[in-house]
Image (cartoon, rainbow, N blue to C red):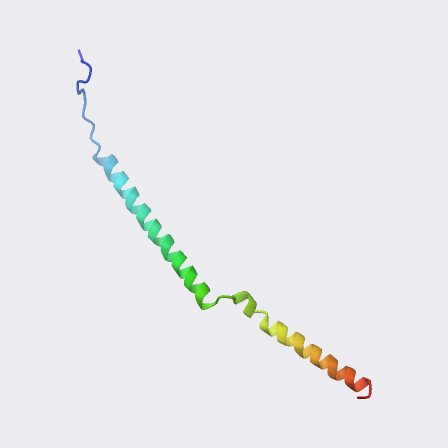
Length: 80
């Protein structure tokens, strides 16, 4: 008969502890990878703070040339 508080079995938890340890290590690797990606992303923004704005430079230049041409053309047609 088993009495209260008496040890009846000892379970081998080595496999469980190994899995917990492995999971903790994988979590640390994932955290390090995330931090590295964040850092890389921040560095990209530092190197090119407004990449989409830079794409507009040729468009703005073309619009200015168009306006310039329109002004020159209107000046010639008005007899100036």
